[in-house]
Image (tube, rainbow, N blue to C red; front, side, top):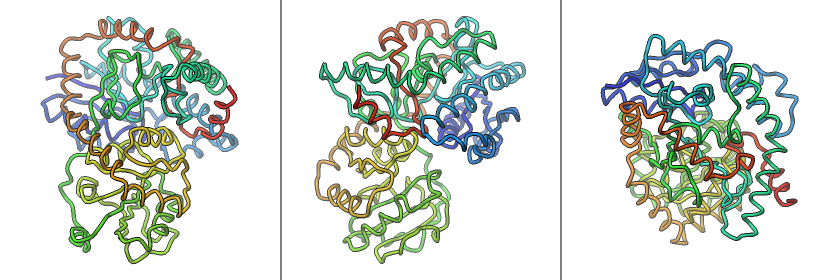
Amino acid sequence: MARFLIAATAVPGHVFPLLAVSQHLVGRGHEVVVYSGRLFRERAEATGAQFVAFRPEIDIDYRQLDERFPERRKITSGPGQLCFGLKHVFADAIPHQSAGIRDIRRDFPVDAIITDTMFCGTFPLLLGPPEKRVPIVALGITALALSSADTAFFGTALAPTWAAADRARNAAMTSHLQQTIFGSAQRYFNDVLAKHGSRPLPAFLFDAMITLPDLYLQLTAKEFEYPRSKMPDSIRFVGPLLPPPSSDFCPPRWWDDLDKAGPIVLVTQGTLANDDLGRLVGPTLTALANEDLTVIASTGGPPVESIPAALPRNAKVTTFLPFDRLLPKVSVMVTNGGYGAVNHALSLGVPLVVAGDSEEKPEIAARVAWAGAGINLGTGRPTASQIREAVRAVLTKPQYRQRALALRAAFVRHNARDEIAELVEGLAADGTAASSHESIRRGLGSVGAPREGTSRQAVGMDTALIREMSRTI
């Protein structure tokens, strides 16, 4: 039996995958402490783990960032808001998160620490002597943003290319945009680390988040990520971390009718980006009102009445349906591009129409198109005609379904829960932080010069601005 500390950024998309790992490790007989925001106490304890909340200074409700940081409202640009968040939500939290980890370890000696990508409180440990710490593992909960000459700057949503001229463009773009947009955030992180006795980051901030941990476990199959000619051995693809099978499903009255229906189209904006259902759910209902198919709209929580569109005869609307029950019946999913939802659909061979323009969603949409498993609409506010044409294309052109089924075959080779558990158990048993860290140092050199890093997560990034900048290089 081992003892694991799971430290998670207090946002659902970061916490929930780690809670799935917590539940699995507890089920295998291990002891687990979950360290995150107090909002997630009940869910964490339901996995069988102990729970420790962040200190009040950093225990921020992700839904109230503007209330906590009123000065953030004055920043109008996406890159400006992103850098503000990096500095004052993530960097400023490092000393408090690090102190919290020390407090937990005094009473709960851990064999390994597991985090999500954006949890930075382990930086002081990762930047210290590897022989004096336990192994640290990070989970890649969104598209991989590792720097490479093979890929464009993360956030531009440009597909990879092997042409020499494009590789040179990628390097120039990365260097320019990294310094232009993220230079101040990089310096801020290093200043915070220096004040607390840590050396500076050895690579660009977002590359460091990926390459510093002893293992970085990407939650998808390798076939759904851009190929890179050089990649550290510490990065492993473990397949999608899917929700456990639903056990308390109460089907709606129309559920049995789906078995007799023709094509079924699911539209969802996820569980977070649903404050304005007029972005995607409403236009999809309008677009497909007269099509010979059934539309299922899931609001992700808001009441059905909040949809700003008439409900057509061929539509069923609900606040929530478990994807493990619904997706096997679906012909096409229309989505804003959340990483978990996209991977879940592809794990069942469901092709996609993706319309996302916030956070890192344009990058996820671009990967769907690159993989051939769906259509990227290139906007977060598509018109009804754009949606209608895309859904028709996915339904009538077999290559989209074929590519989605090929990805399903790649995904089925993985069992993320078991693979993650076996890897972290191995590290915990061996205490191999030092040897793993040395392999990462070698891997860093294979990625490319640290100054040519790339953004890990373009939260709030003005994608149009970045694309325009990329055209000027």
